[in-house]
Amino acid sequence: MFAVYAAEQQYRHDTWTREREHALIAAIRERKIAAVERMPTPRAPRPAQVAWPRPIGLHAAEKCTTACAVA
Image (cartoon, rainbow, N blue to C red; front, side, top):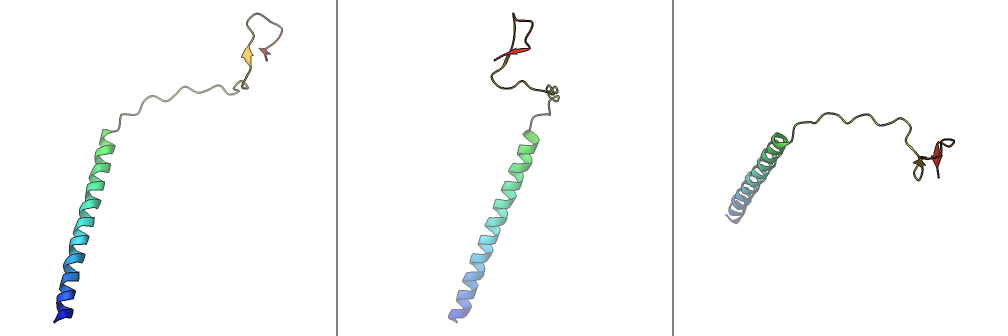
């Protein structure tokens, strides 16, 4: 009789745990769907960057016309 009672208790515990896990998964799924719906509309693409970026530390010469850049 004790084995039957223990099996029933285990079944109830497993059923309760499974229902709780399914509820958690459903809540997570609903939050993901809500988050996707709240995402902002995509903006226009960024303009293309220059093909050859300047090295770090160089700047364009303002007064000197013979050099392209001054260190």
